[in-house]
Length: 204
Image (tube, rainbow, N blue to C red; front, side, top):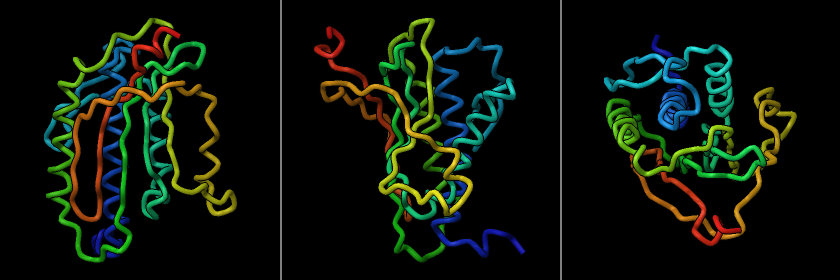
């Protein structure tokens, strides 16, 4: 029996979303040039050419971080997943933000073909979003940060232990926001946008 037959719409959607986020985050890190291009290899996902990390530690960090969100995505607890590029002093330079909303009351079957088609459009958009961002300094770093609507209970599962409070500094002024892509297909609403400091922030 297909395992999807026993899944809730939210569980089925979350599983596809986790796979998508792993690919999208890898693609973003590749586009930002944090590592040499030789650290990645071309693969095809959802019939789109994407990048896959070759270094096992990099690949594991992205995979483990996103996979650890699966039970929380299913419960609608995750509000945003951000890929933050910041200086050596932990000051953010820019953030790619995936804003999520899972309809927990939706009980009908998920049209996975339609869901994957909508997510595919994000990957296509990412391939041309490099022009929206600025060049990063050579000593920059990055991290995956998840924003929860409510804090997970530490005793509920081992996945909670994978997530720790971040020490990344916040901007003093509201950031500039550049929308990149959005979609809405039950039970998921997803937005991708870029946050970067405004001019006054850059002068501080």
